[in-house]
Image (cartoon, rainbow over all chains, first blue to last red; front, side, top):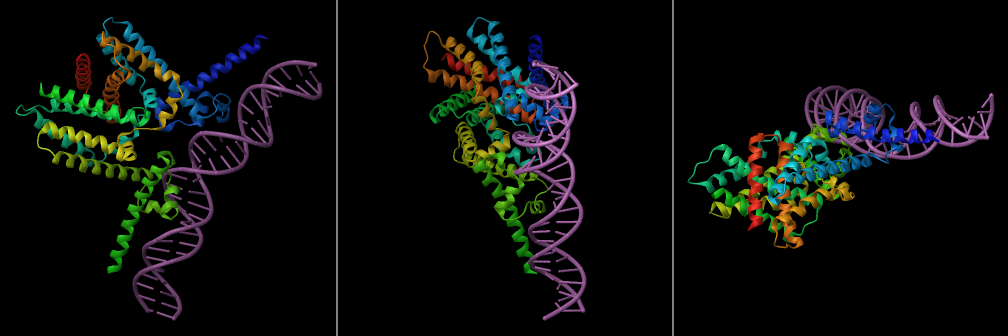
Amino acid sequence: MASKDRILRLKEETRINILDASLQIVKQEGWNALSMRKIADVIEYTAPIIYEYYSSKEAILLELTRKGFLILAKDVQAAKDKHRLPAKQLEAMWLAYWNFAFAEKELYQLMFGVDVNCCEMAKKLPESEIPADLIWDVIVDLMAPHIPTEDEVCIKYYTFWSVIHGLISINMVKRGNTDETNREILKLAISGIIRSIKD
Amino acid sequence: MASKDRILRLKEETRINILDASLQIVKQEGWNALSMRKIADVIEYTAPIIYEYYSSKEAILLELTRKGFLILAKDVQAAKDKHRLPAKQLEAMWLAYWNFAFAEKELYQLMFGVDVNCCEMAKKLPESEIPADLIWDVIVDLMAPHIPTEDEVCIKYYTFWSVIHGLISINMVKRGNTDETNREILKLAISGIIRSIKD
DNA sequence: TCATTAATTTAACAGTGTTAAATTTTTTAA
DNA sequence: TTAAAAAATTTAACACTGTTAAATTAATGA
């Protein structure tokens, strides 16, 4: 019977509605505000209905994660297809990655475990700036006798910090590389940046 | 009266006990398991007592964050003091930063918003490897005609990923740099790595 | 129309952070 | 030492969370 098909189509629609509602809530109020009851409100059902479509809240997050990776893959592939030279391709691909992160900020946070809440905390703490200041000063030393502008140092500092924090984050959430490999990545990155600072 | 002092000292001790208990729970069971009632269990009180010492759960987290930054600052300073040349100092300081991240993993997660839960998710998804594979292939292309080992590509890939993911994370949790500055950091990092790949 | 099945909701449970009231303990003063 | 005042601590409750089972409503097939 065709009505069976229609019902199945409606069910599929509700499945998508749940994902859309979730993402909508997160975009408006952040990840902390996402609750089953709130999702139910948006799709105009009561909470237990959601469990007919997803076995748990985590299952919804997993589906959103998958969605994110598929969009990212599409974007990265499209960026590659726009160029022929590998160097150009690579640059375009990472730029696509960068753009995705901010275009789909909420998905990126979910995919790679970026907890935005902590910024509210650290902002309140003067102590949070001490480590950065220490390193900051040494970068200025390193560039002597040239006296750099604030912006110049800032760029160097953040380049350092990015690669190290990035490597740390990735290791914490993925736990894949060996210590040996990490050491080498670190050395490669740090020496590369130091070299570029001296230029 | 001296008894006043003793009581004040006991109170101060309980304040510290709350922090210690929190960290202990987190180290044993992860951030998700941290609850006021569980903290109370460890310090052998009931939950509302905690509010005599900290105004909220967030206040406890804030205090732990501060603690983390102070330890990090101490470590970084000590690393600097071990060398005289700025280049050596810088290297040692970032290595100290790196070591702190894993020695005080839980604090680092709190300080910089690294959500470890997400790894459980992405691991379940085959789709999560597509973007990496795409970039992986181009790195191999870039190194042609040299045919690199798995490890060689891995190091390049993770160096790229680290700096970009790091920069994204930092921007998301700190929201400080201008787009212009970010562009330049990205360019500096990517071109640096690409250059080192060609070597 | 009646029985069966499906769809949906209500009610409940155990947990969360948090607050107010009740209770116990300790300290102070007579 | 005992009564009153103050402090410390707990119990009970509220509104919220994810989740499940039972009750109810709506739709279907004979």
